[in-house]
Each structure stands twice: as C-alpha cells, then as structure tokens.
Amino acid sequence: MLEVCRLSVRYQEVLALRDVSFAVPPGTVVGIIGPNGAGKSTLLKAMLHLIPRQQGQVFYRGQPLPRQRVSYLPQRSHLDWRYPVTVRQVVMMGRARHTGWFRYPGRRSRAVVEQSLGRVGLGSLGDRPIKSLSGGQQQRMLLARTLAQETDVLFLDEPLAAVDHPTEELIWQIYRELAAEGKTLVISCHDWGETLLHYDRLLLLNQTAIAFGVPRDVLSHENLQRVFQERHDQPRSAPSLFC
Ligand SMILES: Nc1ncnc2c1ncn2[C@@H]1O[C@H](COP(=O)(O)OP(=O)(O)OP(=O)(O)O)[C@@H](O)[C@H]1O
Ligand SMILES: [Mg+2]
Image (cartoon, rainbow, N blue to C red; front, side, top):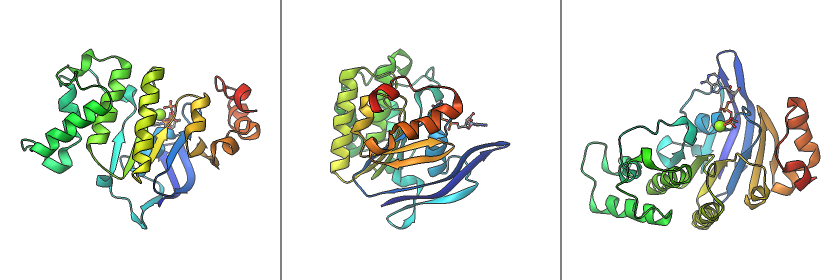
C-alpha cells in the first residue's frame, strides 16, 4: 500500500498543497489531474522529499517511503536539454544507485540500460546527444531512465506531454506491464481527453484533493465545476466528454 497522509506544502507565502491524502494498493496506476498550478508537480516532489513538507507523511508497505525506492520522471519542461550528454548516459544515470556514481557500470547495468532503451523504442538512438531529440523522444528517454532504476514505485510528471498517439499507446502498454508486476505508478497528467479513463484511480487536485477514486466518479460534472468555475478557466475537452 502507498499511503499519503495529510500532505501540505508552502512556498514562502504560497500555500501550494493543503492536507492531501490518498491510498492505493500495489499494482495501481494513479493519475493526478488538475489545472495548471494545482500542485501536481509539487505533490510528487513533496512525496519524494525533493522539497520540504509543511506537514504530512508518505508510507509504503507501512514504513516511511524512502527516496531510493522511487523512480522519478521530472516534468520535461523543467530540464535543461542543452546539457552535453547522450541518451544512453542519461539512462545510465538511472543506474547510479546500483553502480555508484563514479564506478564503471557493470554488465547487468549495461544490459538493463539497453533493455530499457529498447522497451521505449529508442534502441538505435543511444549515442545521440539529448539536445537533438524531439519532444516525444525526450519523454521516452526519461521513461527509459525511470525503468532502468527498477523500483517498485514510480512517480512520473507529465510523461505523456508532447508524445504522439502511437507513443502514448506504447507507454500505456509499459504502464500496464509495470502494474501487472505489482508496481505502483503515480502520474501527473496534462490533458483532459479520454485517456484519463485508462487510469485505475484519479486524484483531482486544486491545491487540495477535490476528489479521489475511479475515473468516471472523479470526472463528474460537479467535481470539474468545483475546480474550473472557481478558476474561470476550462479543461479543453472534459465537459463534453464527461458530463
Ligand atoms: N519554487 C516555487 N516557488 C514558489 N512558488 C512555487 C514554486 N513552485 C511552484 N510554485 C507554485 O505552487 C503552485 C503549484 O505549482 P505546481 O508546479 O506544483 O503546479 P502543477 O499542477 O504541476 O502545474 P502545471 O500543470 O503547470 O505543471 C503554483 O501556484 C506555483 O506557482
Ligand atoms: Mg507540473
């Protein structure tokens, strides 16, 4: 079980998250949805202790969740893509916990990296500098790095932003395989299309948890109104799809 208990985060005067709680069993794919600025990235970072929590705890199998047990895919737009490294080197960084930062990676780590690249369809692009990748290829490389970490819990921040439809299908196939292995995935989502129905659970966030549950319930007209009327902005396709 992954349990988030009453998590709150403050950035100086901005209260970004207030009292967020939810719990899911292993093998669950959880989507976090909410408008821009709702706190989706903040929630993932706070769950990982990448930013300080004002209050709250995260447990995995009854124990505080250690950072090393989680693979984290950061939001693509938060990264500096001019950094002079290759795709393979970035994916190998996912093995640092296994090999140590300054040791030459062993045979197993090299095999896991090639396998992860192949799994996301980047087997032939390992030597490419990351600055030459398209947006969708960047996302697939970040996912490969996450897979290479071989953890039971994965936090992914907008992994489907900028990917085309076939890539999205490939990534969903990978999510399903990971969930079938008993892994827990918590994924921040950027769009409001039908793809939201694929998640096992959705957390609708707007500073606090507005709703948590199966997609059809969470995406009720009432819940969406609570989020978007207050903010005077609209999700692109949600109202017609889900009312
Ligand atoms: N480093 C920071 N310092 C101050 N405020 C911040 C910081 N990072 C985020 N915030 C604020 O916290 C709130 C939540 O931001 P966050 O990035 O978590 O939202 P999000 O739901 O991930 O948005 P998006 O859909 O744009 O990715 C916003 O009001 C944002 O402006
Ligand atoms: Mg974000």
